[in-house]
Image (cartoon, rainbow, N blue to C red):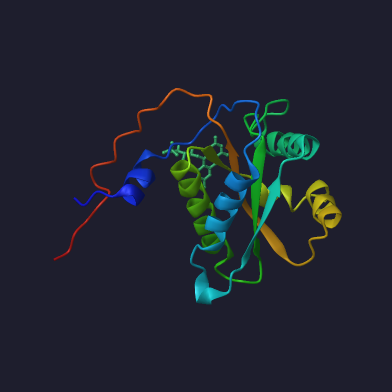
Length: 176
Ligand SMILES: Cc1cc2nc3c(=O)[nH]c(=O)nc-3n(C[C@H](O)[C@H](O)[C@H](O)COP(=O)(O)O)c2cc1C
């Protein structure tokens, strides 16, 4: 198989669930956000929007609501990450989930490529269907029919290197 830096990064990326209590740099944040904007979108409509959140109180509020939806109140589903990028997608686009998911994938791989830990955090859909979520969108001045897709949390990893699960044997079928 061909090996290059991109392929190596894709294979090396792991979900990170423990973070150092240190904020990432603006340059790192902007690099990850920019990579998200270069993901392909159906018909090139660029249906997702990316909202980076670094305010501790806002992350705590998002985490509180997320834990409640998860049925685990009092836990921190954001794992203490200092940055969370919320991906919302235009709900009027039939491919809003696919478009937003690719932005998340790009951002997680970009994060890995510059030495940041990252993880997809779920339950954004339910969060922004709730009054608390809608109030945040209003506060941020985000208007429109958006669906929550997920969060890419970011920070410096406080985890030891992990061994990934082996890939299942029937992942690939080749028809020649
Ligand atoms: C759609 C989706 C939702 C996920 N939601 C969460 C989540 O809420 N919390 C979490 O810790 N990990 C979440 N993950 C991360 C997966 O658990 C993780 O990717 C998987 O265990 C494989 O591990 P790896 O990313 O290290 O290869 C999610 C991943 C995807 C693709």
